Length: 293
Image 1 (tube, helix red, strand yellow):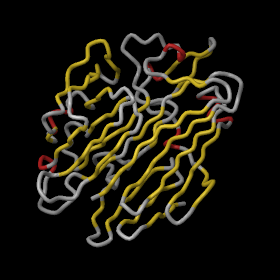
Image 2 (cartoon, rainbow, N blue to C red; image 1 turned 60 degrees about the horizontal axis):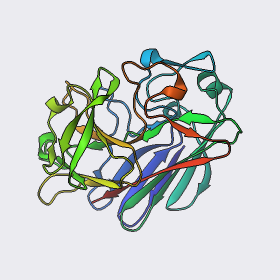
Image 3 (spheres, rainbow, N blue to C red; image 1 turned 90 degrees about the horizontal axis):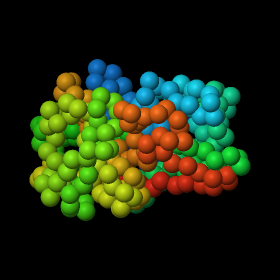
Image 4 (cartoon, rainbow, N blue to C red; image 1 turned 30 degrees about the horizontal axis):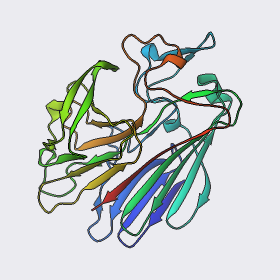
């Protein structure tokens, strides 16, 4: 089932499978902002990442002397959520633990995703994770939205820039293969707009450490163009990615509360790099939004 949100300017579509944002269209010119999932390049639109972000070492981890297998980015993107509330301009999806999830991830959880479209063409997104048990749980969560680049006729990928605000130097977390290397961060200078160039993604995503500081990323061309502003209220990291070697006409801006395992990861979930924990009956929320112009 697809849920449709609408205001005067935009039509937003979200599918219950993975609670995935699939389309944002501007009515006056039928402009589509969201990548439409051509499998030649990448078959998804904006998957939700839970209960891990990135890859585990050997796609496995241990918890209380048991070994569990979990593919990159977790299982939420491949499961059906249920709609628990809905209005003309908002919807909340929910996923709870099940025998299937317990075979991959031995925790009870309640995971909700709320989308709300306001009259300023802003789509608010909230991730809500609740621990319904007495046992402490461990998790990561994130988004992976892909935006068309170019968005407009006669433009090309390399016409687009990503501006990061606050304008300062950020720690950039490098990857070794699919694994994080947080011990040797590089500096990313946000005083200079990041022009989209395919060669910059030879070593996978550009990952910036945000340390929960409110941060905005603006994707657009320099002059009189349409684009997207992503505002992250309390994210730990943001990833910028396009698949290397394919010259794909899209770029992902990804808010993350977690990262892939390190090369020297022990495999113990409680020791995992960038893991979050929730005490019994505690809750977590991750907030971000997209403004389309």
